[in-house]
Image: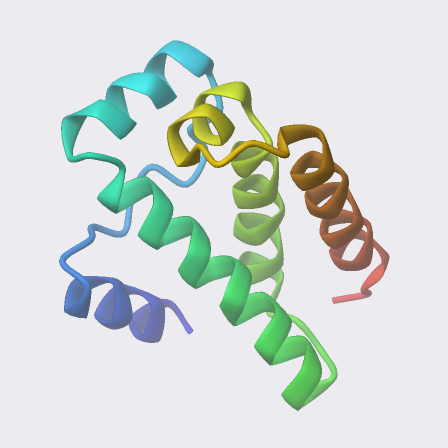
Length: 108
């Protein structure tokens, strides 16, 4: 799974790092560094991978689950919600919490 994640991210031009980034100032710097490309692509990829793995295999790789949970928390931060724009931040936070609850409930 590690090789797959690294290779897929590399194909997007994104490094396999920064998974634990949650502090708002550091997150804002990362978003500003490349117009959000790395943070958003990495998070969207790992969240999508987690749910597709759950749907197709009925299970989750523990590392994918851990990274997806952190990505969901990161996506719910003020820095990311503001960066993505479009309004509806509270509704989006609620959706992200629901996704997090789903992944939290899955046994690995």
